[in-house]
Figure 1 (cartoon, rainbow, N blue to C red):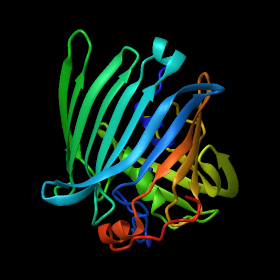
Figure 2 (spheres, rainbow, N blue to C red):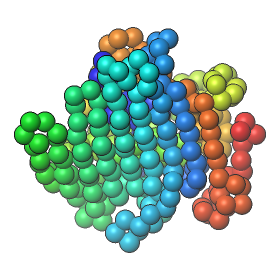
Figure 3 (cartoon, rainbow, N blue to C red):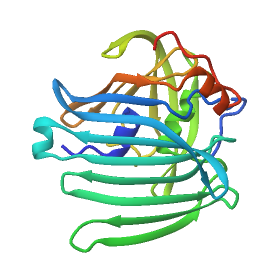
Figure 4 (cartoon, one colour):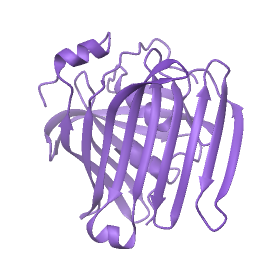
Length: 272
């Protein structure tokens, strides 16, 4: 019943898209809480938040935080304590740093990837907590303006979504970069614990193996059809059926604070 951290991220994506202007639809202070379910079983909770704007090598960056933890019966036999963090340049849609601390059952790993966008290089440090506590470092090249898997979700939120459109994004994961195709499939109404929303249903499609649990399995994300494109529901097939993340609480920064944080701040949607 192993749930990889990358799935939780895209459930809770280089070459940038030609002609697409980067206008952040999110701001410092946003905090989203999701209930994670495996079929009819509530297995835990996850959060997506933008707690701060930090300096990474002198560059202001959105600090994006994703945390997931198991609860109840699931926690007793398969403990999950995942923390994923990304630092996304406020000036351009590109990643400057990504880190993860994963504890899932007996699997435990710490990883930090620094992305030097000017030099086109990455430096990865990984420690796997097993009987050997194996540590490894890797270095390599990255394409211009590449994104990590967590920042890619926030980049997609900031794109001009429209039914029938598709976007291709370079996503760096581990020591490799993968082309991720995101298709905007449909406009439909969705009811979750946080309320009722008109949403775009988008589907990220893998061309290569290595980002999500299984190549070829469907992953769907519902983003609100307003300026924020807030994720309210995420669903994916896994070997035991399907896992979903449903929005239960949404906290947005005050409108005046949002305007001060970004030059392209959007008005608060009426849904929240």
